[in-house]
Length: 404
Ligand SMILES: *Cc1c(COP(=O)(O)O)cnc(C)c1O
Image (cartoon, rainbow, N blue to C red; front, side):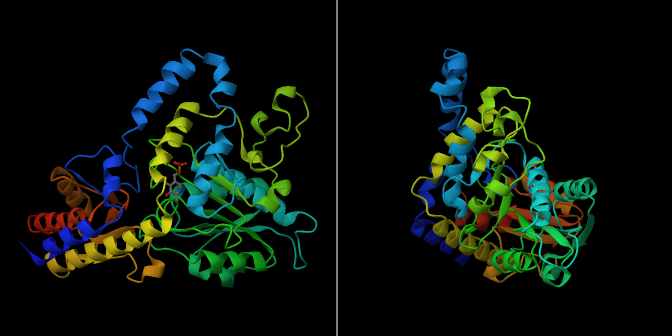
């Protein structure tokens, strides 16, 4: 047995999170795509069946109260809260990440312009956006800028502090870059944006459930994130929106639907926003997806996010070591930072013919994904990926590269 294989076995044997894998439906495939679609927790199908058959089928309309459907967006927000370092009452779940980016960004511009929130230094007329962002965030930011009469300036996250001025209204940033896996400095960048009198909106799609975020600790004002990646909520499970408690009264949603009304069943022609995080709600929640997410979050019971982070770093280090040992020099180049403080929970390898290579990997039971134009992306979900998986993925990668 190779030295790396025996190390993988020892690391798996010592892994205190190793048993969590049994909470998921998995097979012999090495699944390194949990940063795109998390695996299915084993108890979720029965729970969803109960929601459909009993709550919908038998209780019907009574379920809005009796099954807790109406309050699910806030209740499930409170369930996600400890995973991202938020006290209760600040997160609401619903709509897609794209829609929540829109709500948060427009609300950020409105807050920055509000009397009291606008320090001297000129009108707040610019939005900065992470120049390497996932495309949807960039598209939404462009539209939000047009609607609010702002200009949009793409900036590399590291250049944001230098780009801030009295003209900046809002800054849309990713905590972890979806392509390279680079982790940005959330505490430092948040403080810099706030010091300029602007608001940062953080997209946590690739950090929620992968590493400690510390929203409250770092004074983040607004954040959004996905629940179908590291939170395993299922395909298209609704996203979350965090609005820091002291900003909630000023959060002026550009989508003020009846679900965020102070008295939703008053059916009034005038809009009056509710208090608290539920100001981020819009219309009728997507109950089936929402309750599938709620059930899937139970896999986190008793799992500290710090332990997940520690395993993620050891796993990605080990994978990189196996790649270095097995893959001939020069065939791949890691674009994921080696420094732990700058790494999310994925490894991205630049590789010639990456599209073909990933296709072959998948045929051989190693599932990652290809990101245009030349990136092999491997997501490591510590809840169900082990060290043996990492070793096997690197070994199969070396074999595939020997053929193409
Ligand atoms: C996955 C992801 C999204 C997805 O947005 P949806 O509206 O859920 O499709 C958005 N932003 C980032 C950074 C992502 O990684």
